[in-house]
Image 1 (tube, each protein chain N blue to C red):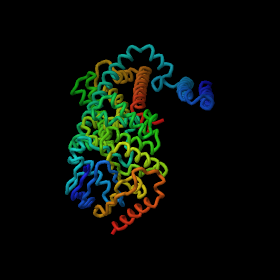
Image 2: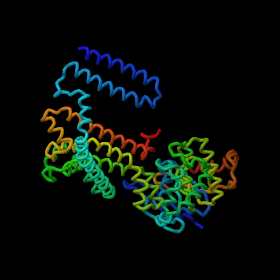
Image 3: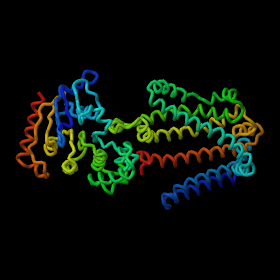
Image 4: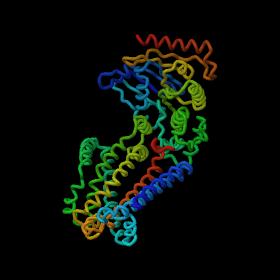
Length: 279
Length: 252
């Protein structure tokens, strides 16, 4: 009981601290300090509640146990990370998004392709492509290749829809301007349509990031070699090693957040001129 | 020597909208010709035909002795649009350099040229700014610099100052006159404003709508050296009243 009460006291205390910090610190420091303290509060409160209420290990391991697992099993976690994120998700992400960009180029020149592909793209983007996972495993085997294939199919159409919109995102004056300069189609693409498309391209990349993570992890539930984050989650649940399951989830969350953050930095530097990014 | 000639020029848009009908006009080198008239009189369309942005459905147009398409491919004209149309991801300098880069001019010559036209429109010192960091008037001046960058003998301007306030407009008109006198370019200038047309032009083409046609061509007797005060002179007012009358007659 003491632990539960102290959890509430801690919550109130750190909340008050955050309010004070948010007022006193410069905006730049507060932007980092406040969420960090908020996150720590949450972890500590969960730790105290789990201890105080004697929550079963199977329902929710103590955060401290998860962290311990993160360090003791880091080699295995790294191998799983390499297998699922670097090989499966990243390969599929690059191939899927790259292919979508290429097809978008073709579609921007061919009215036929655009009219045919876009409605189809919107339809397929709405499909739960994860459902294809067992089929992809049958086609491409148990290795990371089948996971990459699923990620490709999940990323392709959302990215395509964004890229096609982006390549069409020029206004009449800009197109007329390039016409008055007798610019070649390649010049028009490189100097007008591609830069104008960048906000859309980056938006597509951002949309595809969580899709790639989900696809690569879930696909391993349907068959994989004895390595990989999805595989580990599935087998560890079976052996009630819930601390390992949570450790894998934490790794996935860190990977996803890190990659997304990277994209935000790229977006800021490439599309600084867009009204949504101007300072 | 005629820089632009039109003979029996007609353009009918799909849906049987007659934008231009039987337009005959000849513009000599070094002239400053204003096109004035109510909306729908085809003045912008005429400019776009000269620029090969629209294809006529009848008659003939010659631009610097060539067909409009040949003239466009030879980059015979600079075009200034109603909006600045500057690319937001390029600096002012980058925007002005754009036509030079497209034409494959080497970097050093281009840089010199960019610097000199930015000076001409009094934007030196703003080359590193992005268009969205500038006021509307400065953006439009940058777009004029861009049209001047490759030194085409013909300048086509489609209501370039239409969106600007009167004070900025007066100033830009003054600068444009200086520019025209110093560069000896031929200018085709579309406007809604009678004072602007009279102040700037050597020749005023009054157009009337439905179908778009030329109502009257008025030669401007004002001397080429025109301080802003010229607009209070009796000569100026009499030309302005000629234009106004021609516009009124054209409406019938």
